[in-house]
Amino acid sequence: MLMADPPPQSVIDLFTAIAAALSEGNAVAFLKPFDRAMKDYPKLEADIVALTAQVDVQSSIDFLKDEGDDQARTVELDWFLETRSRQDTGPLERRRERVTCRLARDKKSWKITSLDPVELFRPPDIRNNGRHSGVKPIEV
Image (cartoon, rainbow, N blue to C red; front, side, top):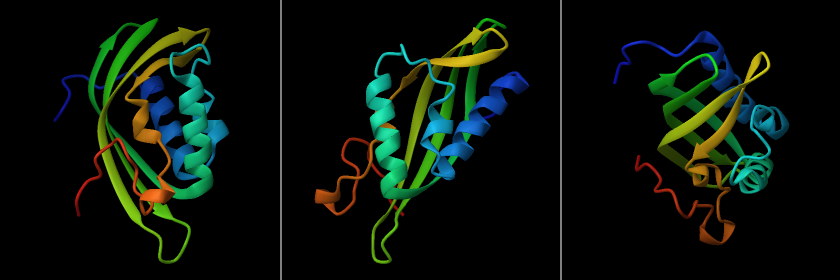
């Protein structure tokens, strides 16, 4: 799906940076642009810390929709995650979700004030052969 107008470069840069941070296993850098007062922030933080500690993650994002102005925006993303166990025989899982984020301008930078669904970032359930419960994995 092609967008009529791409989001501002600063929004593209923000999501490029958090996707890269997740792929690098850097939970702190991933969480930095999120508003700590955001609903579900504690859950997101716990899940991201656990996810990056347990598995290697590849993350990519495509923009589907962008609305707003220079103070507030809503973006819809096609977010793809591939998680791979750090064990040689561990599972590989692919997840893909349509994610909606709201952003607000905080001085000169954007803050992510909501992200839905946060369940995309839940760590794998080790009792379920490493499979994530809640988001349907992509069949390969």
